[in-house]
Image 1 (spheres, rainbow, N blue to C red):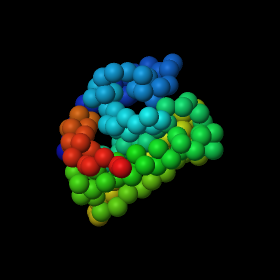
Image 2: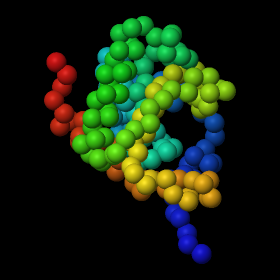
Image 3: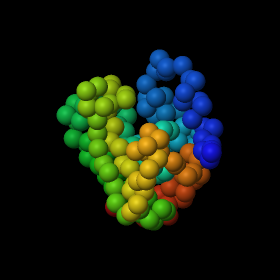
Image 4: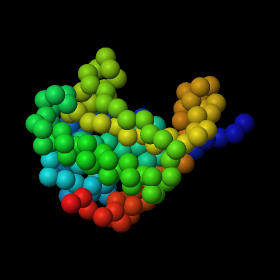
Length: 164
């Protein structure tokens, strides 16, 4: 029998449910690496997903705590999309994915894990990245730790020329 070790998942499995919004907490905290905040703008920020579908899975999140995209003012929505674009470019430079899945799950029935604070997911994809594990084992193998991914994407974001 083969074993698959993912000790970082124990925190997710045993942690109590947070009474606070994880996005608001990360937005207000000063320790970006500890909170996996990759990039901050004036109205939105990029943050890695702690429970990713693939390594490099990040989210574009507004500072405004609202449940849906249509609740955002145009400058916040615009900055979310511009930051999403910068994150995609950084992923291409850092990890060379073959494509991306982008999406926002708005509302519980649409699969939103965090219903009250809208966010857009960016999941990098590689040819052949789906194998028997998600189908048979109902699990996905992520080959990097959060902080390895954070450091790789943060370096790629810092090398990028700023938008003019």
